[in-house]
Length: 428
Image (cartoon, rainbow, N blue to C red; front, side, top):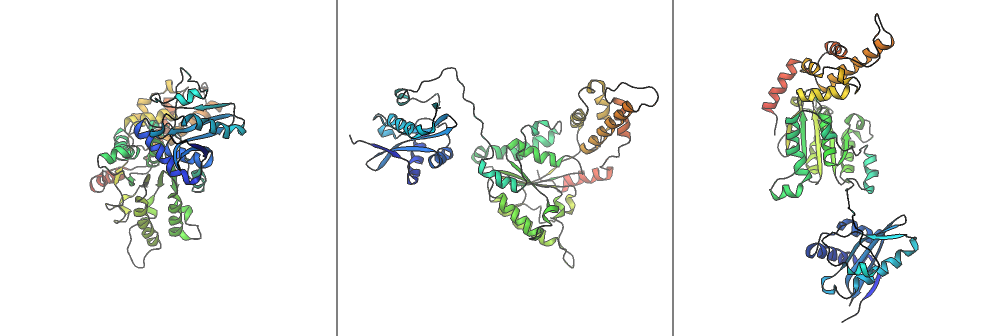
């Protein structure tokens, strides 16, 4: 039987390591570390390979975190399993990492792994009663600078769950947008093409921006908001700045891109002479097909005035869905009120009465009324007129007074027009 030698990993060995990883996955068990992590560690950390007759028959890859060393990958080709290759690779890898001053060298293997003799022979002990937990970090370090340059961010988990009520809208967005994007492999199996672009429309202040952020949070994708008003001052002009922004976005791994009040840059074209914004609208219409060709992207455009958008902007092939976001229902209003009423005051407030009195209010209207009531209650406590009241927070009458003094943003006429738009424009 021919002998083998152990040497350091060379960049030309990358294809052979890929073959070993694939063979391990297909014939034994899913490796703990993904292929991209293993190949990255080969290049940036520590790796050795076993070679026989100029053919790589095994590899071991490790990385260090302070005084803790981790074996990222250890594999021997199936035809060479019982030649002691694994043990020799472990010895060589430990020797290579010794100058790092490690106090511990650890390895994780799936509980279905059968061939662990080489680990035991090299002094590794199986620890009992341990659970391994893993969470994938949605944005890698090399993306952070590009994300920062775009003014983007990673939104906190849980925004989706924090939206109370609005069950019809949430279920629609979950099924049409979130699920196909989060489970792209399953969607492909069923012949479903994950959406790339969507328009949210509805009266002002109904939470379209909140939903866009919640979608990004739910997917754990980067969130980039594009502000046309800021881009307008760019030396390249608004159209040029828009093109450059989307070029930078193309370098992100995953992204939800949000444009609010998109009617500002997608107005109806026509008229003589042509308006200055027609060039911007033309540029945006060119950008969208290119954006759609890139996987793991979702463009969310929001508008209060769906009728003002250019007819070519909404056509099939540019936007997968045109989804209405209406005024909050009873459960949503209850959730919004509960969010703005202080916890100490909540037991003393008739939230049901507030919900009843604010039908037709937008979330922004409720927020305004809640802040107005809190301010009024604070002033009454600090500067009492007549009989002083204990400074314990606002009460039901404070909130009801504020509601009466708040003019609803959405008029009955606007609400009626919105219902007509659902029938004639929405695409679900």
